[in-house]
Image (cartoon, rainbow, N blue to C red; front, side, top):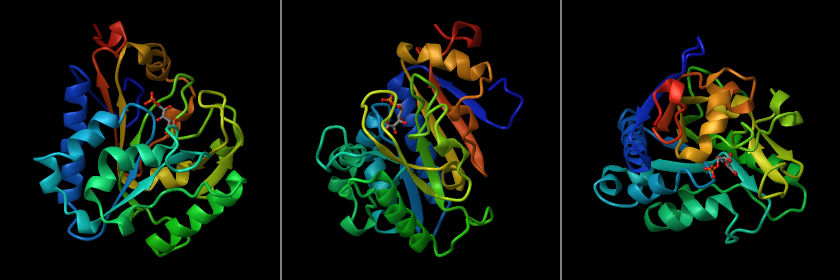
Length: 248
Ligand code: 6PG
């Protein structure tokens, strides 16, 4: 990243190449785990091409669906089925076509308090994991997918919000988001997101160039603070890459 840390930046030509590279990396992680696999998906628009690819052959037939469990890194406090609901987007494009229903783990949004929804999801994650504390030798997730918002947020970890400093809880409620859609959120915290073999950011398109310039300059923004206990990879297409980093 030019940041003096261990994150790796991979540049690809365009959003299609980005989705393909992400799919290959995901499949490599899946192939490397002969047991139960946990993938943490992300919302927003960036992962849609990837989800579409995974739903089709050859990727679809390479995924051992019975062994893969699907979680989500953050959710907007709207009803399932709402166009703003992150997991519903992933279900529609990918999961409902391919995954056993019991392997899909949405964040509950049926309680008006995001904190209560967060508590329930934390219980679900801990029960799936089988321990109260993440053990770096046994990551909770095989892959955590991430995106970067225009203000440098990732998941629903927004600049200046209390959730950024949470080190004990795995999931917290977030008051109304400062960016669209302006609704309360529920988000996994850094300690939960970090507990993965690979954290994979997808960043594409010219509208990401301004925030990417700030992130690559090392600004203290949430997306820069998110790093896996294993490998952290930023997949970036040429349209998003600042000129000083070889972008078009
Ligand atoms: C959300 C997301 C969020 C997203 C970024 C990037 O619920 O909004 O999980 O963190 O990943 O905002 O979003 P885009 O892919 O739409 O640019």
